[in-house]
Image 1 (cartoon, rainbow, N blue to C red):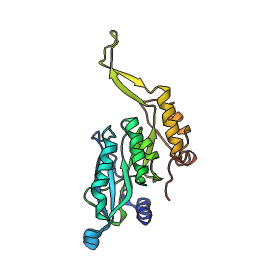
Image 2 (image 1 turned 135 degrees about the vertical axis):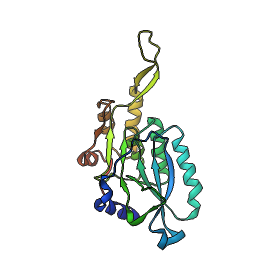
Image 3 (image 1 turned 90 degrees about the vertical axis):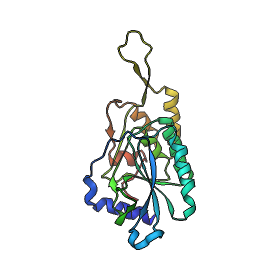
Image 4 (image 1 turned 180 degrees about the vertical axis):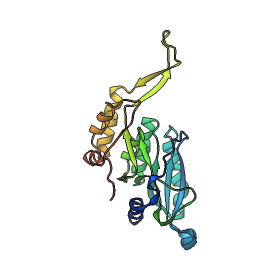
Length: 225
C-alpha cells in the first residue's frame, strides 16, 4: 500500500499531469517498471506492472503468463498501472477476473518511458469503454482526478449481409443476455450494476467521462486510497 500512496501523491503534485493521452490502437502489452531510483536501489527496486493498449481475446492469458514469468524475482508487487481505450468486452471481464485472482490494485495511470518510476512520477491515464470492465476486477481501484474513465454502449462490427447496404460492415449491439451477464459480473466485483445499464444508454460514438461522485456512487473507483 505504501507504493500506491506514493504513486497517488505524485499524481496529485506532478507537473506531468497535463501530459497528452495518445490514442494507441496497439494490442495491450505489459512491462515491468521499477518503483524507485535504480541508482539508489539498484537491482532491488520494487516493481509494478504497466499495462497499455487494446484488450483483445489474448490479453487475459498474456497477463497471467507475464505475472507467472516474473513473480519469482520477489520484487513484483500486485499493482497495475492501466491505460487503455477499451477492446473486447468478454476479454475485459476475463482480464478483470485475472486482476482479482492475483489480488491486484489497479490505478488508471501510465508509466513514463523507460524502466523506472522515479519519485513516483507516473502520468495521467485513461480507461475507456470495455477497459472499465477490466478495472472492476481489481481488489483496489483508483482513478486519480487527472485520469479519465469513460463509458458508452457496447458494439462490434460484423460482415454486412444486407444487399441494400453500401458498407461491408454492420454495427451490432450487445444482446440483453450479455448486458445481464455484465451486470452480474459487476455486482460480484462489488460495483453497482447501474453503471452497466447507464453505459448502454450512451451513444456508442461518444464517451461519457465519469465524474468522481459517479464513480463513488457506483463503487467503481476512488481518487485516492
